[in-house]
Amino acid sequence: MFDCHYDLLTYVYMNKCDLRKVKKHLKKIFKDNITGGIFNLFYMSPQEMEEELGIKKEEIDIIENLKEVNSLISNYDLVPKDIKYIYGIEGLDYLEKIEDVDKIYDLGVRSVNIVWNNDNKFGGGAKGDETRGLTDLGKELVKKLVEKKIAIDLSHANEKTFYDIIKLCNELKNEGKDPIVFASHSNVKEICDHKRNLSDDQIIKIKKLNGVVGVVAVKPFCIQEEKFHKRNKKYQYAYIQHIKHIRNLLGGVDNIAVSTDDMTYYKTNKRHYKHFNVFKQERMKKELENLFLSNEFSNEDIEKILYKNFKNKILQRL
Image 1 (cartoon, rainbow, N blue to C red):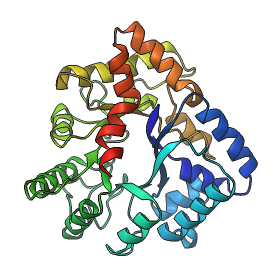
Image 2 (cartoon, helix red, strand yellow):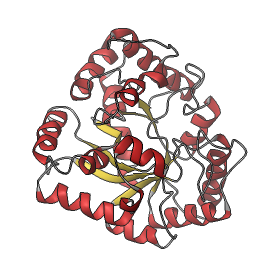
Image 3 (cartoon, helix red, strand yellow):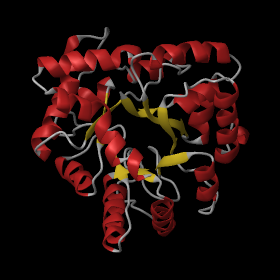
């Protein structure tokens, strides 16, 4: 199974003083389960970084943080050699200048979220100013990302920024370029009206640019229900409904992928509660296969959703 959005780099960074624990956890996650995907380092506002991740403002440096995590993964063999993965940066608030894209590319970054929930110098986030779209600097950044063949992750962008990116990428496509866009961890707004979920039109726009939607196994994105206590089949069934909706909307499964956005490493119980996953990450592949079969998905469709679509539409174009 390819995981479109796993904040593994942040997990490693936060637990760099206990890498034996990290290695043990990752071994369990990868075994007969996750075989690749996008492993992210993510950035919020300075206050959130310190309160939620314990990372102080003076520690925040995308390039240096990447170098450190890259070294830890390599030196301690944290990721098995057979795992097919790329690095992602979620939130480019701390990118100092456009030219630094070359540096993060050289460190293995092949996917970025231009914005996180907050507005930044490049555009508007999902919880920011609804009228703020892609800025002039943001347009310059998109052109640079397309030039470098770095995938643009549309999850977390507000609608104005989303459509501005789509418009610019279509213009670049008409010039003969190959913009790679996708939404790594967003579900269907028509089913669950969450700020970070996508309208049917947004999903169609992603398909037209040959991208994928990584349906995310996080409860608040799957079902609108205030209280929940135990992981159960109801939440998993809700997850499948998002995949069915996209399949029916697009006439097939070729633009559907999956993601965990697992955050069990968070230090605050409050955040973990809000970010409740409907599958145990280490069992997600097996549980999904059983759910797909019981909901009459073909073996071919299951293979496409679990790894082939992401591999063919994203990885092979980078």
